[in-house]
Amino acid sequence: MSTSLIHLSEISFTYREEKNTVLYDLTLDIERNSVTSILGPNGAGKTTLLHLILGWKKSPSGRILLHGEPISGYSRKAMGRIMGLVPQSEYISFEYSLLEYVLLGRAPHLGSLEMPSKKDCIIAMESLETVGLAELAERPVTHLSGGERQLVMVARTLAQEPEIILLDEPTSHLDLANKIRLLGVLMELRDRGVTIIFTSHEPDMAASVSTHMALMRDGRIQYSGQVDEVLSGDHLSDVYGIPVKIEDCGDQKVIIWHHPGNQ
Amino acid sequence: MIRNRSEKALLSQGGWITLTLFILLIVFAVALLLGRYPKAGLMSPALLQEDPLAQKLLLNLRLPRVLTALLLGMALSGAGMVFQMIFANPLVEPGFLGVSQGAAFGASVSIVFVTTSIWAIQGFAASFAILGLGFSYFIARKVRFGGWVIRLILAGISVSALFTAGIGILKYIADPVSQLPEITFWMLGGLWNITWREYLTILPIVAPSLIIIYLMRWRLNLLCLNDETSFSLGIAPGRERIVFLLLATLATASVISVSGIVGWVGLIVPHIARRLYRSDTRYALTGSMLLGGMFTLICDSIARTVLMGEIPLGILTSAIGATIFMALLMTRTVKVEK
Image (cartoon, rainbow over all chains, first blue to last red; front, side, top):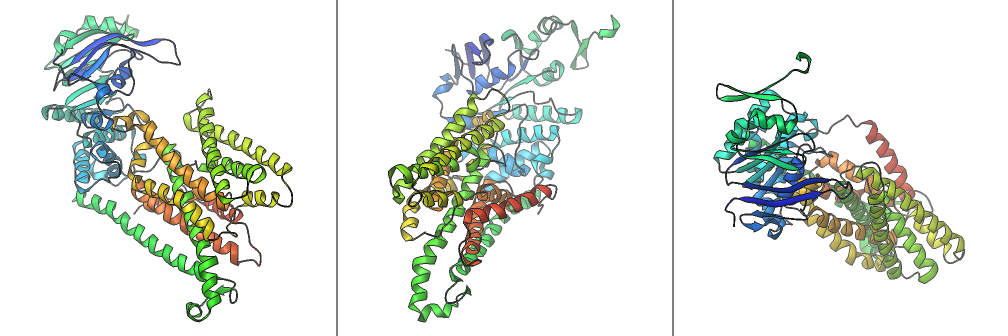
């Protein structure tokens, strides 16, 4: 038996409509209180992997264990309290205020007929404060920029108070300042004991907050483990199929790539 | 400080709901006193104490009709809100997904082939309404292009058209003396033959459906999110959607089994409710039900008092509803910011 928080073994996945397999024979362990970044080219199967861990998609083979138990054994509500998802983007049809929207994160803590209480409101406001949007609490979500929306989705997941947070390309719409703010939020969560798994297209940014890293290509995990072991120029070049180098710049790692015009 | 302000903003919505309830009670009282006895206009409350005919009229004719109008409006606009949330689209109402036409077809089938008993009509209307919804849903899943909502609406339009054609055939073969007027009444919508019997027949279905929807109303918010998001929030989106849809369809089919098709209420009232009480269904659904009740009550009062004869209610709600809808569409940029 594995002692890790989440244990995936021999997972595969095929979309019914398209005949091609998205994930092959995938095995991965997530340690408690770790920050794991999943990198890889577009279409490598990163989002599908997150959806499988969440239980939203089901692997026809292998197994996914959470605290040593199959995830299918957890009730929906129990799962909602353990794991939260920050999707890549979300279509919002109605003009919710930021506060009303973040309050939705309290759902797994409320009974079917229950309404959010004052305590839930306070938790929601604190979550908005954490991502720096408390000032806008009464504004409609539909008026926010793409980056602010992404931060509101993070706040909603914070209000959920899960022990594991999955984020799908959380920085894709953020400007530099908000990116750094989000990294700060992730580090704060990690200090609070939350386990984090996120996908990213920015290896250097991901490396700056991660303890572990997995590199995917064509539905397979090519390299995984501690960041120092995984993040190397050779590995990245292999996964992305273009030559890249990694340089140390102070305490940060920087990706150096060849400009296509300079060859 | 910000925290207090936000909490206040959330709680102040409750005050608006109370105000709406108060106005609704006034409208209700006025509707009861309004009519053509002893002369056109408002009956004086003093008359009620001395005139036994006025008492009888009020208790046996007006009260069940006014109560049914209220229930009809609450059910249609409550169901409209449910549909709009579940399909995450403000342009959906039960009528768009084959529910209303299905119910009308079911009622016609009952009138022509089975019996005109109110129970049978209600049963047939409800079954075919659910069948219509299921059929639209099934077709939408099979459509091979477009987003989910556009597929549903296309499917709903075609299923509705199919039912309308069916109603046309039934009308053609119906007995022009006994059956045809019943079907025609159905298509126009109206409450002129409502008695306590009709009201008490639909109440046991409509009231529990609306109460359950009302109690679960906050969770409706979660169902307008992307499926994977609501799933991650500890919801089983498929299961909860079906519960809400069935309740909304039951309530709708039940009320229109006695009223006939009353259009536009389910579309327009939730729109107005969202503007007045904001989008959170905790308040918007309650507000929608209250406003809906008020809207049909006012329309029905106009329908029975303005002309010597009756104006069919469905015609009035469509005319007024469509006008308000146009106005809303053109003032889209005007936001209600409190």
